[in-house]
Every structure is written in structure tokens, then in C-alpha cells.
Length: 108
Image (cartoon, rainbow, N blue to C red):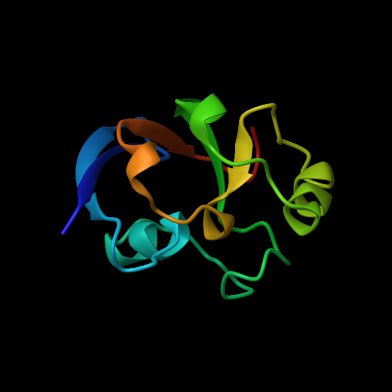
């Protein structure tokens, strides 16, 4: 099993480093929900609602480019920034080792 380390900053600013498996095909959204982070993911991971919005604070450039569906959702978010991504569209893989994400609040 190949685990990676992911740092997650919650809404209160607390940061936790978690170990995440890369051999189960999980998305970052599924991993965050499994670790009891308050990710709504209303659409179930189909990139239709943007309620799993995160901001990638470290290693953003190591991620694959977002697809058209994800970009459409990010374009309508009032608090989206250059490092915004939808956690449901990020599949955990070894190249993500050391990534840091911040849960994006609805209003910022």
C-alpha cells in the first residue's frame, strides 16, 4: 500500500497532517469526508455543485489541470482564487505527497 501525507487546514485554521492511501482510487473529497471534515459534496462528486471547494496552499503546480466541468464550477464561485480546486476532482496519487489544502469557507 502506498500512502501519502496530506496537510489539511480546517475552517478555524487548525492544520492536521494525515496519511492517505493512493491505491483505493479515492478522491480528495472522499478522503476528507472519511476523516470527518465538513465537506458537503452535495452532488456526490460529479463537479456540479462546488461544495467541496478547497484551496491548494502547497504543491498546486504538481496537480493535473482541472477539466472543463470543474473550471465551469470554479468560474461561478465568488471566493475562487488561482489555487482553487474541487476536491471531488482530485484523485489521490503518489505525486500529491506533501500537498496542503485549505477548506474554503462559503464567504471569504
